[in-house]
Amino acid sequence: MSKDALKERFSSMPAGMSLDRAIVEAERCLLCHDAPCSQACPADTKPGEFIRKFRFQNYTGAMRTIKTNNILGGACGVLCPTERLCEKECSAIMVSDENPAPTDRPVDIGGLQRFIVEHGRKMGFQPLEISGDGSGKVAVV
Image (cartoon, rainbow, N blue to C red; front, side, top):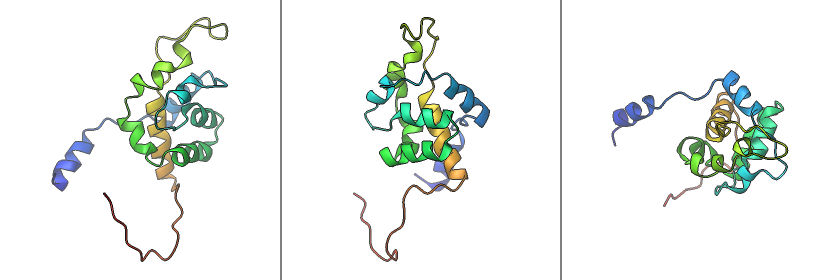
């Protein structure tokens, strides 16, 4: 795929959440103790944990949770079928004693994850430390 084709493809991708929208969405989370969304995440990104940290304004902690548990967390925020995985298990849509009036939709976990990773990138967050002098070789399979 040419460079121009890639540029076109990504420029047509819808914009992510704003900070205000992300805060409102995180406020919808019920902060479950044993978050079913985290248990349903095959990439072990731990949505319950990063949403809790984000909600309490620990933005660096939220970014670190995503990147520590899954270095490809940024890609997951865009590509992962969250509606079939973690969002399907979101307690916000489940009726329980703690949540007698469920909402009509789950927390937008994928959208929050994308926002946190993009926000971290803008703030210069570096999830990996560069070791050595950088003169080694890397192979990608």
